[in-house]
Length: 133
Image (tube, rainbow, N blue to C red; front, side, top):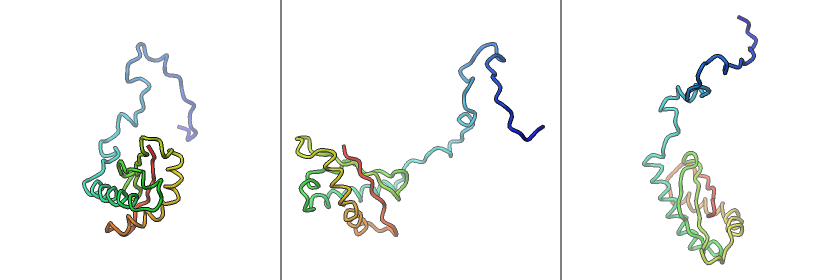
């Protein structure tokens, strides 16, 4: 057989009836359960809780009025504990816009990360990615 890649053949005319499995990807069919993305473990969730508490206190004690108005809703690994997605909510009264909050968070990302690094016991501080809701 030649090492050249053969052209794809239209196989729709070869089967009399089309079934639900026709045209499915064999990689998905033969995928093993250990290939699936893993859920966050107990230690990862514990780290996320610690980071949430530290960020809540850091935002409340900060001198910026926009950051003081924000509330930390949740922290989750994205995709692992080296990078954490921090979900932050703006006040419902409309005093702070989402774009303004995102700009202030981008400016304060370094000091907030150093606050987190001082509060947790890890060799490397996780990177913080902020999502404003």
